[in-house]
Length: 84
Image (tube, rainbow, N blue to C red):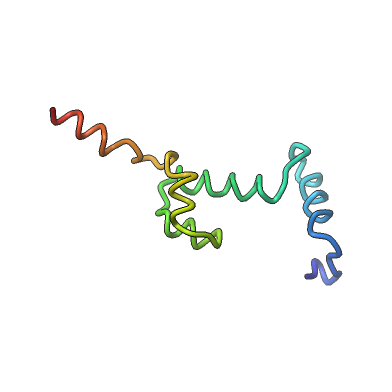
């Protein structure tokens, strides 16, 4: 892997430097960024299949871990109660 024509010896070191340059809180990891991306995409209403494809994971994993963030998550239950 290269960046600006130079080899990247360590993704971990490169990420730490990018976090520093972006003036993010220390402790940000690749997992933090992935989790944030998944959370934001689901919360914005992107279909779980598209989020899964973007992150290279299963749709079921997205549903299980992030489904509660979807804007329409409780709609069906609310409608069912409203019909009573």
